[in-house]
Image: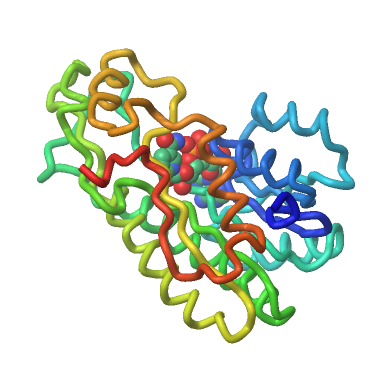
Length: 270
Ligand SMILES: NC(=O)c1ccc[n+]([C@@H]2O[C@H](COP(=O)([O-])OP(=O)(O)OC[C@H]3O[C@@H](n4cnc5c(N)ncnc54)[C@H](O)[C@@H]3O)[C@@H](O)[C@H]2O)c1
């Protein structure tokens, strides 16, 4: 059974490598034996979690390159760099994404006043950027005849965020999660189905992994309200995310494609 999840000699690309979840996915892939080519925006500081991984794994297993997922030309260049360093990737984790957390200044928007630019940028990174990365790296995988693509979605691609989770946060107007966030993630799930059917004959599987709320940095009142709404009674931890990722990345899921794996503690079942 252990071998079913083995990623020895696999090459994985992970976007959004320097954020909160990036290092969780990367550590799981490295521990399972893969080499990892991490991507993030130029200028983003190497996070503490990523730097810990660099201490555990040298450049023969873990590399970091810089690109904007919205920039096709730059993506072509980093894809060439990745192939030169590690070979053609066989795993792609499309993790880079943006959201808009409650503002520290308490400044929010009424629905009718949300600037279109906020919504546009979210779609451009979360949906169109993911598509561009997949065009560049996924095509190489299809040419090689094998691969697994994991698109990171969100619980909010399936259900609307509950504004009551945020109503203790001072602000006028009160905090409103941008509507484009969930819509951009719902689009990712449908894109996942499209790509899965398109590339199935070429040996490339494409699935979505949609986490619920992941513990880290939220205020106590938010956590209390959120956890009360989760059948398993808690937010997700790094340990909760590793297994589902390795399942989708490895041969353990050889007959799984075009699906969405919700890792939400049962939130969407209620
Ligand atoms: N954290 C959660 O609770 C949670 C829950 C459900 C889904 N998700 C999804 O998981 C993914 C990772 O979330 P996170 O919490 O780590 O977010 P994060 O903001 O901590 O990290 C996102 C990373 O993506 C990078 N990024 C942003 N725009 C980019 C661009 N244009 N090009 C390249 N890189 C870019 C950022 O620099 C950052 O390092 C996102 O897609 C998010 O929607 C997160």
